[in-house]
Image (cartoon, rainbow, N blue to C red):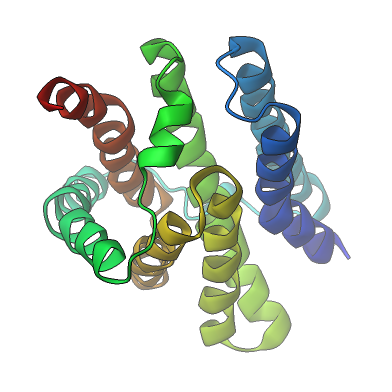
Length: 218
């Protein structure tokens, strides 16, 4: 029961927050509602951590959180470079070929928000998503179903779905690819720190650093 409850919170908590945020504050530049969304995401993470430590009685290593080594930043930064310089151009080209909307509509919603908020959102979102969808969900789904394929597939699909309310179906489709890569890496290395270090810099580049240059060129 503890694991089932934890999975419901971990997998569907961020999706519910995204849906409610879009319905309550569509295209809003007001900072407070967005901060409340980030606070809600932290509550989801705290709830899952409480279940892990107090109810499941498992250590943080069951989430892929281990003592720091040189391997985590090395793998993380290598993956971040791959996402920025290889995956992102291919994904954008694929969306254009499929005639699907890209990230422009989602970025337009964020354009009026302070940069410091965007940085905070990337830090919270990247770390939370990797702890919930990779560190927690993969092994738990695998243990309940007896299949690591389902352990990887189910969180990836819900991870992609959770991006649709904010970004649209085209970008959500690309997160199936990026989420799939992070999932395969986690199954191989069981290293949440490396996943976060791959996720956060890639999102910082895409959401904070590159949009101002694109607007200046336009």
